[in-house]
Length: 204
Image 1 (spheres, rainbow, N blue to C red):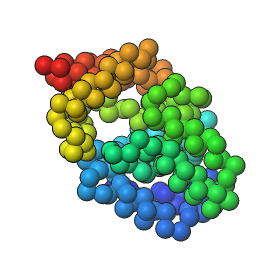
Image 2 (cartoon, helix red, strand yellow):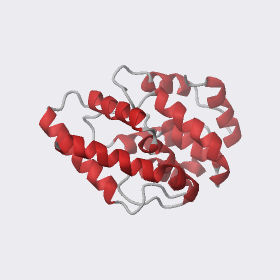
Image 3 (cartoon, rainbow, N blue to C red):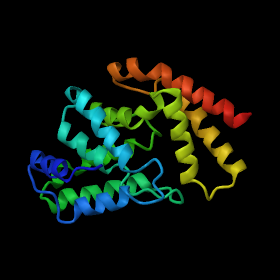
């Protein structure tokens, strides 16, 4: 599902060449059997959304790189997935002679922890696109919840339900899930309906 041609073209747009082995590493990570949601399909969906909303980006190439790499490291037993993903992606920038972009890329990837408001417009776009699944149809959203549960299959059901409910309440407490007005207009209302329904199911 991931395109090596698009990956190479992105690095050319950034002004360099894709580091040797980087696409194979990406493909292996996102194709892992335990990536029930945070895999190639998620990245492909993010890139498709970027195609539509690319005019909102200040540095579209760097936004695209952040979307490609924001879940590069994903282990449900770790607490530092975004930081580890950012460090690997920034190493690739350094390898390509593009280290000047590292700080901006790191901020975009760390923003996908969804703990603090994004620091700038491009980080906000990455966050909005990463959360696009929340604003999908009820049926698609239900599939997302099921996939997340599979990724946490090692967590006992009572603990999972409590932790997931806490996360959903945190999201619902945000003043806005989406930061760019066109994306909020498309996804915000449906996302809140989906989150409320999922929370009710967890607490039933």
